[in-house]
Image (cartoon, rainbow, N blue to C red):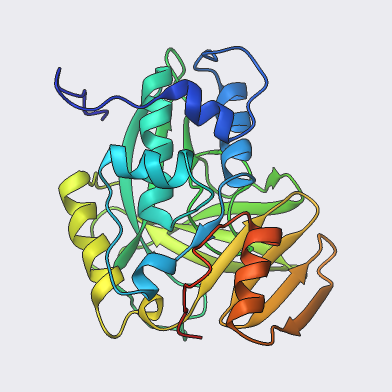
Length: 282
């Protein structure tokens, strides 16, 4: 499912998007598996994950002009609805077929906990090919994808310096099985999130986005969460704790002194520019 824009709908500045992600290949690139993997990797390593707007008290807009102004034309990032809506629009403009999905995050949840569907995932079709793929540039965790991966089960998927797989799990309601996305950490497969193939559309994400950004119980309301994904280093800033994680699993943590240092680190290490008078609730 790839909702075609109306004649009056805003169009993505694809050239500006490709420049933002550091694309050096042909413009526009052909809709192939190689392009899908390369665009995904370029996006996730160029545009940081961040929840600064919800933390400061408002829900981010998912309207294309606003996403373009924030994620493409400014040194800012966003969380899953922003990131994957932008990627979905770009991939659609390149000729891929896109179906939006919604997942229940399992990372960090106690066994047996059932969370609401709060994470956006993309199911991608390549023209002329039967194999479908999963793309997700908005999972703010070290277990997220570097590149898009084939949508297959019980197969280890090398993914840059990371390893992933999908397994099938019976749906508790007796409907279609769930697809569980797992990451390999220290030799153990850990659940990241689970989803079914029911399509979600922009109106669904608008509601989930508003809930995630404004519900007083949402973690995005209370704690600064910023991620910068690289092939050889993953950076995370949670409140004032900066964590560097290397591909071999080694970590280095330090606590930032104050709001001013947080703003400096956001600019220098994460590529996020905020006004100098910004006060973050840390």
